[in-house]
Image (cartoon, rainbow, N blue to C red; front, side):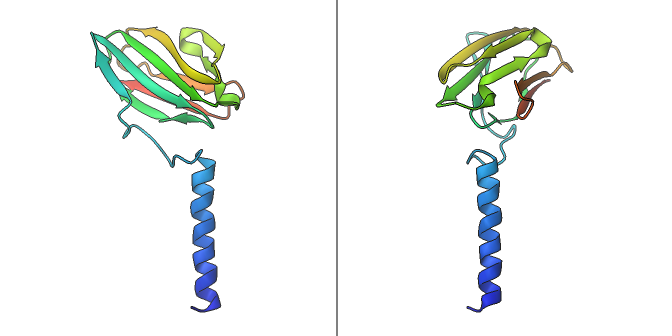
Amino acid sequence: MNKTSLIIISLGLVVALGIIFSSGGKGAQTGSVNNVEVRDGVQYVTIDAKGGYYPNKTIAKAGIPTKLVMKTGGTFDCSAALVIRSIGYQNILPQSGETEIDIGVPKVGEPLQGICGMGMYNFSVEFE
């Protein structure tokens, strides 16, 4: 292997590591993650909060009672300071555990937007 090949491989590794570390080690996660569940007529949307919010885009059903479940696990960054303006929610999540937030019965075309207290991280839930 020549020097040019080693440089290209090294650059590829640096880029890959940069992507992994900038996303909290989870890679880019969107609505492809199965984080929506309906139990006993209530829809639960689960979002992990640590180094950002994962998944950061979710699609859920409109017209049924819905609860947002925020999961933390050793969360010491600003993603623990959660703000959801549309429902008047602003709170510091526990460092580890689950916080259930009742968001009522969402309507089609009225997304739920969450953001950290510093404005660095965000997530959205689209209702169809």
